[in-house]
Length: 262
Image (cartoon, rainbow, N blue to C red; front, side, top):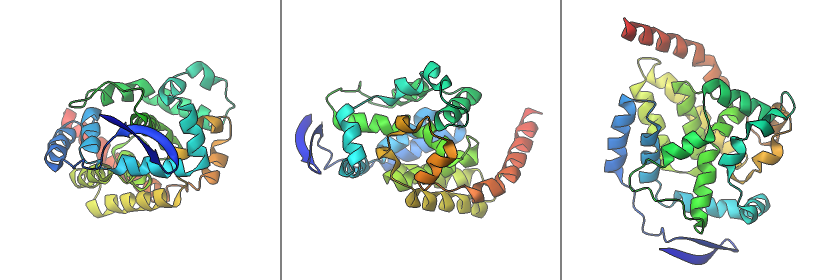
């Protein structure tokens, strides 16, 4: 059931989430499945959804407090289609943010539609209601995930994904993100000592807090600008702690993969 209300001076239509409870049982079950198959992205969405509580509503309110956020809300553009428009992205200058994003997704075999499809697999998922403004904002957060990989410099290796979740937690305050990061670090302690992995995660969490509030940034407007310039303007620092331990992490991870294949 949707309701019309005023949120930070803006009229919106959204569900009543005041009594939404976090489902820890569902989150632990999904985490168990995710640890068994790290590529099962659906389980990550299950966890984030189960533990969201009112975090998305609060983040949406913060988004609407900014002039840029209100401008984006008036347009209500859907990012997924823009991000998968490779013809548009190929026209951008070399070294630009948009060019770096295209290189990232093509080298990793990713697409924005892939995130949309995985999101659609979560339990009790309902088709997106075009009249639900909170759902639009949730889709925006989802579709920005790989953009944040590019902006932060955290890779798609296991440690990089955990670090980006911690960074994202500081941006959205959804406890599901830190839940995955912490338990993922514990599970990956064979590839990297738990204290060392947590050092990377805490560093990423702090970096997310110091950065600009990325959900309200018009990322498409920044695509043509040099990536380094965009990072500076958004107060996103180089992930030095992550980069320092990454070679050791990848070496151990590759060794374990080789042993498993024998």
